[in-house]
Length: 287
Image (cartoon, rainbow, N blue to C red; front, side):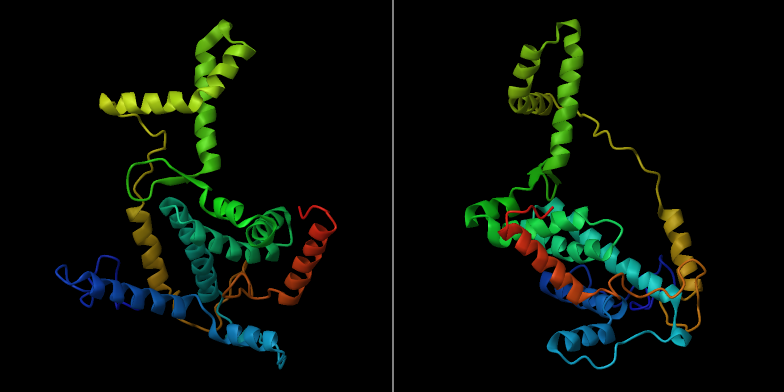
């Protein structure tokens, strides 16, 4: 809203391309708008300059935020946007079945998971996946690992789901079938159901489609969040949350940084990765 000069969420932006504009002009406008939002509210130019200098060997002075110039409210919004956009990108990559983008998101998640010192198991899983794709697996197996992680659940744009979620759907179908067996359930009958589960589900879906039987998805119907969204946006605008105002301090988020990776230790990350490379070479598991 700050960039598009809107006073409220219901205002209409006059600078957007009209409905009869070409797709190229609409895409150009969207790319420029998204880039400006990321540059202004997500990226921290000074911080990335410091990281670049550290990598190039020019240590200099370590950049730190002046406490007198600190703005916890703006820093909180920036950190939330940075991680939130990563999560949305990850979910969209899953829905679109984009394996390469999914892998790129995991590379960013690896930094956040490693930066969380309370637990390392998820960071190790992400690191081991990078090892598999880039070194441990054959090119064919690495390609399958990247692209064979999702399954199509709906005949529409997007509509892909993770394979573990698909497995949960099959488990639910299996439990229903076993329940209907009643006292006739046995290991032999359950084995037959398991072996024919995929074909059975395909036949059931085709039967329902031909008879136009609509099956509820099971997802809970969420109450409209429009009113709550308007209240949140109004509070952010009234408090000028996206404008720098030095001196604003949170009680529970004191000295908030504009990124969860602000104090990320690159040298420790390199050491950690190299150690687990050695564990792989000595046939010690990386996780």
